[in-house]
Image (cartoon, rainbow, N blue to C red; front, side, top):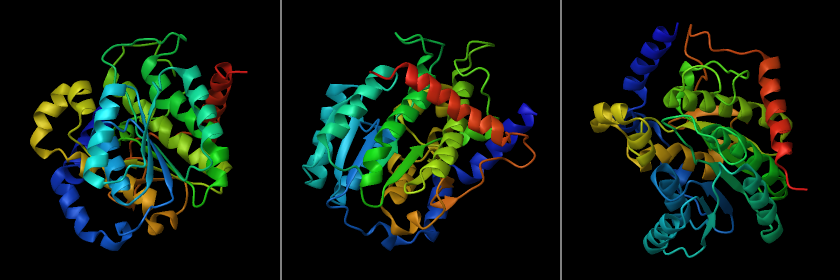
Amino acid sequence: MSVYRNSAWFLKGLSEFTRNAFLSASKQFVEKDLEVSMAGRAFMITGANSGIGKATAMAIAKRGGTVHMVCRNKDKAEEARADIVKETGNKEVHVHILDLSETKKVWEFAEAFKRKYKALNVLINNAGSIMSQRDVNAEGLEKSFATNVLGVYILTKSLIPLLEKSADPRVITVSSGGMLVQKLRIGNLQSERGRYDGAMVYAQHKRQQVVMTEQLAKTHTSIHFSVMHPGWVDTPAVANGMPDFHRSMKDSLRTPEQGADTAVWLAVAEAAAKNPSGRFYHDRKMVPTHLPLAWTHSSALEEQKLLSLLEDLAKTFQPH
């Protein structure tokens, strides 16, 4: 089955995830959807110093939004901020330093942010990590799980009260089409068993993000949740984390701006918020979260169990 899944995914990718596929899909885009002012609205973007995150921050700053860049590396973040301010003329761009793999610090950051700022309209969970080998953080958690899943869960959950108080609140998570080859697994969240394949672990985390989004949308109905696939994008993360794929597909990969397009649309367009909450998007359209005949569906019980496992783990690291 995995051979079928991988083959079906790759063929789908060649027709839908490439640069040419974006150019083709973009002919159907409604231009005025993005002709909006975001002045007075606040956006938090994780991993905003390069790739899709930086392109998203740039697009929102151009529309006058207040941008909170949440980044791991201070020097890179300040350099990216300077680029954004210079290009957009928008000085309401703020840098916050946080490593999402440090679970307790994610809690502390979110609590401090809520104390300092009175509004947050949109949270964009973009930061991600593909590891070449299994590594654990100081808290004993597998690092990519801590970054891609638990960190995203804690940041989102702890900022929900602030989002709910703000106008037209939205949460967008940047997932990956790689999740289409993965069935939700909740018995090995820390990748302790079996051979560690960084790309497959990442794809499993992206499946978990989709399930997380669907579940949170059911519980927090005043917030518009969405999760999106940017297509195959030429970013440092792909070049470093999937070097063979990057090398073979380099000429067909999307630019970071093309990869960011749907995230920006979900964050700012009025049309996006009219769609149901909790859905998966690609090139500004709601798309299925499973490949046909791929046997990747999970039960409602398994999906709820993922959220309760994350909740229990998150509480373990919550500062008192």
